[in-house]
Amino acid sequence: MRKLAVCLLAASAVVLAQPSSYRITHTYTLGGEGRWDYVVPDPPNHRVFIARQDRVMVVDEDTGKLLGEVTGIDGAHGTAPVNSEGRGFATSGNDGTVRMFDLKTFKVLDKIPAAEDADAIVYDAPSGRVFTLNGDAHSSTVIDAQTGKPLVNLPLGGKPEYGVSAGDGKVYANLTDISEVVEIDAKNATVTRHWPTPGCKQPVSMAIDTVHHRLFSGCRSGVMAVSDYQAGKVVATLPIGTGVDGAGYDAASGDAFASNANGTLSVIHQDSPDRYHVAQTIETPQGSRNMGLDPTNHRVFVVSAKFGPAPAGGRGRAPVLAGTFSLMVIERVSQ
Image (cartoon, rainbow, N blue to C red; front, side, top):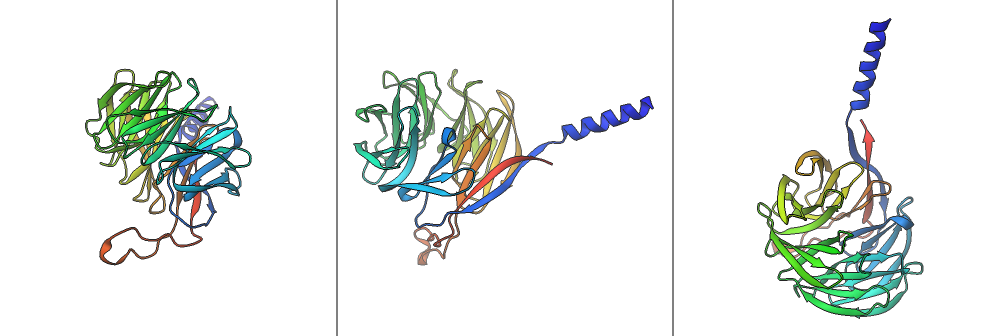
């Protein structure tokens, strides 16, 4: 009997030790015209903001229902919800401005000047400021989130892509043209450091682990570079798919993610702050290069659509087929 009990206990341990994996659990067809860019969850309100060229779609995380849109944008890219102020900020890249909007009604409240190619946008709670990352202008426009007033255009020394707030007074961003990470002192609106990303060319997407002080840069050269942002150096690189444009990190699972245009979502597991391994490669639709992560429910959101034939001669992008744009939910499930 004792031997049987030991065997049953061992069998139970094996079952409990079975690894979990991620899969697409829901697909919501949203439709609508236009390409897309950043996918930004709003965890307190269970919503996702999705940039769609001339507007930002606001979608219910749980049902996939379109709740409304922020309209009148010329080249939509990033969105930064600031719930403490009841407003959001969305970049309008073609005219180098930011739309400040009401988080309840989605009505535009103000048009704020930024700079050429206003792209990603990050809210830093300790300073109460919003930081745009202006690609072609090689700068960041610093905006007071309470008043909506621009404070300064800060030169960054390279072309920024996505960035994050560390929650300790520092903001970080990738400089894709020179393959570096830049550190910004949010309160003083000054650049404090740069460091290179060896083994990683064209870092674009970024996520952060604030407990272990690590940054995850998705690189167009097909790797994820992990930086120790206290030391200012890369500590690991891992292979990912091609055409990355989104990243996330879930502290609960220790998993980092990279969404790639080649139709994959790369899952990188953190074994220790300096050691990582590729845990899974999830098949997604072609073009699913943007993602958002809600750390409160651990869902990953990716978007894609079906495409028509490419233009003759191979110049330009294939058109998005009307009515095919979709939001997919990826969740961790036990095997």
